[in-house]
Image (cartoon, rainbow, N blue to C red; front, side, top):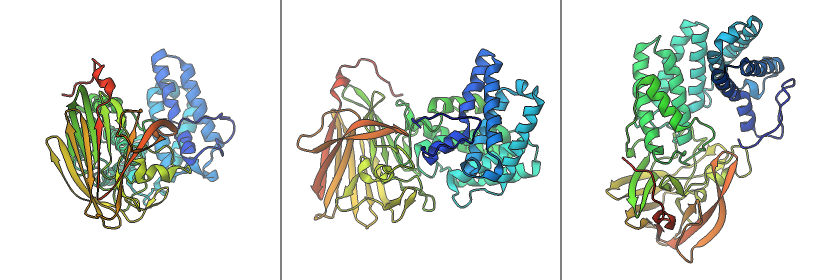
Amino acid sequence: MNCDTSIDWEKPWVCEEMSALWEFNLHYCEFILPLAKAACNAGGEKYVESGKDIISSWISVHPRSAGGAPWDPYVISMRVVNWLAFYGEARDTIDEDELFLRKFNDSLYEQYCHLSIHLEKDILANHYLENLKAMILLAAYFDDVETLHLAVARFVEQVDEQILSDGMHFELSPMYQKIMLECLMRVMDVVRTCDSEAHAKLHRSLKSMVDCLYSLERGIERTPLFNDSGDNVSKGATSLLRCAERHFGIEPSFVAELSEGGYCIFERSVGNAQVKAVIDVGAPGPAYALGHAHCDMLSFELFYNGRPWVVNCGTFAYQDPSRLRYKNTDAHNAPRFGDCEQSECWASFRMARMARMAGWSRMENGLEATMVDYRGRSITRRIEFLPEGVLVRDSSSEKCVPLVSTVHMAEPFAFADGVDSVESCYAPEFGAARTCRQHQVRGVGLVEYFLPVPEECFEQKEFYEFD
């Protein structure tokens, strides 16, 4: 989370000065996995002992009766997987310590029982899928066959609902798409030995998710910043794609349109640069799960030779006074009418009346799409890839209402003269803000601007070649 403090393992892991998300991550215990990795590489038992000490501390200072964040269902769902992964890597050493193993298993079983009666059916979406993943892994670990088959059946149902036909997770966050991809692969590793029919169904979803991830991040190796997204929460694309190929035999294929998820991808030679564009032409998210939705309809990100060029502002934090600012339209390279947002974001994880897509069409060198804001007024955006750069044109039939189109440059690249410009910031990672330049182009009924390829592209000799 790009924010640290000291923890006394002998006391409850309470950090009142930190955010709830920071505290959740602390109790995920994911930081024991590098210890397992170090033990594998160096063959040193001291790394395993450090991991055991951390787990023992958690068990000692966080009894179930104390409740709170450590016993939140989502936190349990993330933690038990990390504990099991640590055990899997260091099993030979851990099995020799009968006292620790008994304590470890007793705690896992207690968390298993607690989770089973606190599944997050009130929240659903990614939370519920993570709950079911944890139930499946724990049921397999404890050889609870009845629960295993029940949880697998529910997991398959949720995958059918949450993973769209193009592989995008239905909350439409590239970051959560990667988190759900990891979730799916962990479950499939268990299911392949106990339910071949479920494994076959999940394998089809896995293929589409792999293609989706590969298409979004090919050549940029960075999480596109749409809805709640950042680079330091999910596993990296390279690791996830390598895992899918190594363990499930899936090689990725590029797709230019995620038609159900609502992302259109262009990879073009513009000037002397290889330009990648990711454009949002989808809905904010599922109507009953809009906690991670932003006002980013018709927004886009541009990369040249793999480097950020035009960027959305990201997320920065979940519990922070700036939360709504990062969700609003002007935090994205998106258009709006001058008197309101695209959609109504009225709390950190709440959206009321929503914008919607009225349709879009892809051309050989561009795209045209129309959105309708929550007041029922439409804006049409046309993006064209020209030999010298990218042309963006926003128009509306509402001739008397001002239009505002915001553009964020990752670096102080050239832009049109006379346009309002201020120093701003964007967050490619949670908790890490970087300086960018925000430009706002205004007009009535029509806004148009041109993004010339950065001059330094003409000096570069080596860059990513698209297939």
